[in-house]
Amino acid sequence: MKQEKLLVAKIGGNIIEDEKALSSFLEDFSKIEGPKVLVHGGGKSATNLASKLGVKTEMIDGRRITSAKNLDIVVKTYAGLLNKKIVAGLQRNNCNALGLTGADANVIQAEKRPVQFIDYGYVGDVTKVNSEMIKGFIELGITPIFCAVTHDGNGQLFNTNADTIASEIASAMGSFYDVSLFYCFELKGVLENIEDKDSVIEHIDLEKYSALRDAEVIADGMLPKLQNCFDALQKNVSKVHIANAEFIKDNNVKHTTLSL
Image 1 (cartoon, one colour):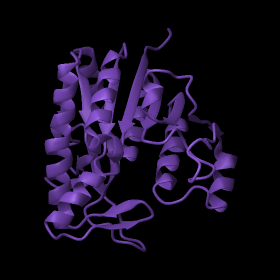
Image 2 (image 1 turned 90 degrees about the horizontal axis):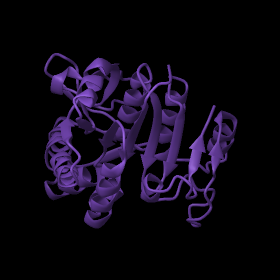
Image 3 (image 1 turned 180 degrees about the vertical axis):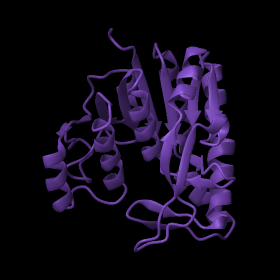
Image 4 (image 1 turned 135 degrees about the vertical axis):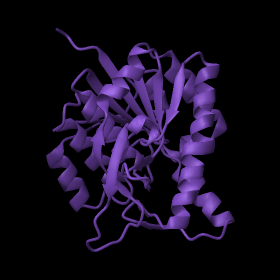
């Protein structure tokens, strides 16, 4: 029997920060027929709030070091204002959305990232996704909206990379659906030259990814994003795309497609 299609989309901080861009994306996302899941970040908003409160933000290779103070800011920003603004925007467009952290309905459990060379603080690596629960929400006609907060089942919340959460959810839902994963951000795709916004690399496989990484064409925050893409492809996800918001309306616009 042919599986029903499911879209898992992740939106990043630059879209969330732009009220007009976010409103437009949510309107377009609402029009997508069939089951869908949205994951959002919000790192820029968390960094801005931290700065206002005099709390230092530290990033290593595109990943946030999360102290206890930073965790409080992350949870307030991601699970609070940003998540509810997105949910309200979708409800305005007649998309029945439900905002969630990993702790809600015990949907995503994580464990503290082990300290090797770097102590990331209260950063969690996903250990389990309750795909049955997510499927239950979808079957009730609810669109789950996940922020980048998980928990360990023992009362501890964690900051978890939103790209990773999207990848893990997409992979887990592959047991029930034909899953496509879409990373949406302000650029048209992965760029050959960061100074040329039209220099989109339209197809990247593992071999090309390795070459681009070694040549430092891909660096910083794009490194973990692409690693999450390939992780998803290796675990039940049919298609992975990186593009700007126009892709949600027109799949033929220039974008980057990932394959093994």
